[in-house]
Image (tube, rainbow over all chains, first blue to last red; front, side, top):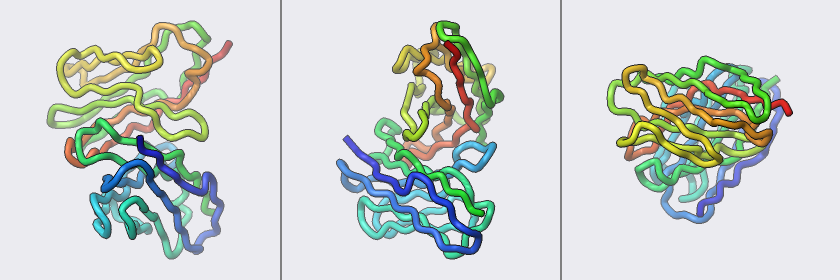
Length: 113
Length: 114
């Protein structure tokens, strides 16, 4: 079964600093990959999803970007963090379609100060 | 636009008491509905899901949920709560069967007193 590695678990960054969150997946090939964020008082919001290497779809306009340099690697980045980027970031993966095999990582709590 | 509402931010129950967590959705088509649980430091774990058929679905850990189309609701229930059920619970709607994209509610934090 799939295993999602997401790190770090917590991160404190100053405003204006860059960000790189990495998510790697084991136990599957050619997965769909997702980045979700939960801001304070809000539900988990889908930020990006990817159906293959180099294929990124952005769901909401924002200060963040995503990349998929390898089949099982999904990176969330920012050149300059904003206070509003604070939140809980979850990586998820699935086999193509069906919701049957959708797995989530343990998340990264990002605080921008 | 599609949305999911969990009106209860925080619920506290005594161990052994019954539990119902509310979820309402707004979605034009036939929904795919889910309940996930997140324990501290853990990823989301799927409790149960509804795609079609019997509107009362059974999940893991003794949870069940009932889909009521007329009320646009998918409430989660458990007859007797255990201390280990303390966690955050998320209701979600699936947008696309092919891409597995989900819309989540804001979550309900469950606290269980002994």
